[in-house]
Image (cartoon, rainbow, N blue to C red; front, side, top):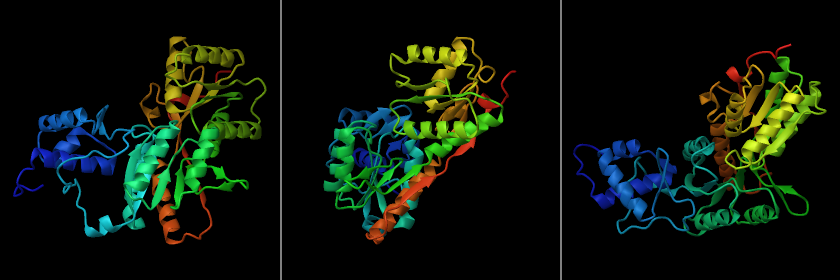
Length: 378
């Protein structure tokens, strides 16, 4: 907004805010105030009204659209404003739905990659947030994108474990628009045909971590992962295969599939795991994800077990691993590239519906920090 433009009316200001929120998925109060040219106090008043109306949800540091809303927020004022310039060409691009299970951990960078790739791919992204395991909500959100947003393609990260998830995948694969799975892989039908997908090579990421720890001289590398993660099986496969290839000791090496770190059972499970690692002379550990790794290190500290002095730790995700104390070595998926590639893949499918199904695996990298930087004591 320039100085020559009249200030927006409150209703117009809130509509502009909602339009930007639909486009971006999440917003910060300071960014909204700067874009609208108003004070943060004014923005907070607008947010309070929108929250009371159920049009937005407050999250730490900002706002987002309600996760389970069946329809977008309604208003009496037509949306004419956006925080960035739009053109007839942009609105004429095919709409591509993007449904992700989280807007505040892991997924924002994937969304950014997808959105940044959209102009060159000739599409525009319509973003929705869902959850990791609510299959009914995934169906609801997808239906809204199809029926109300009029999408012509779909980028989605659905649940993939269990019979209900298999039925969901079958339903998605049967839609009359192209679908690309993001950070998920799946097959459908009696011949187990692959659904088009772009994902991290999680097994390779685990291999990087194990080879790093083996090169430091560790002979027994344990494994910890959350039962709730859709990638646990692939990370475990990479850990086990690489341990065998590098001659590490696997017999008797504890591998722990834990409940979520917020689960009341977490503390007892981790105490038992630490006891097992200690009694088997396990000196290093691959932990998936960052949150589990950070909670584990805190528990070790409470018990007088030093990281990396007594137990070297490598995390998987690298969302917040570098903020831990000590800073955690971590496997870092190429999240931006995953989103970018998914948009490109879907665009190519729209242009050529008969092209072969593509399954793209993108290699992560290992970021070495303090938590794995020493050799084990003799």
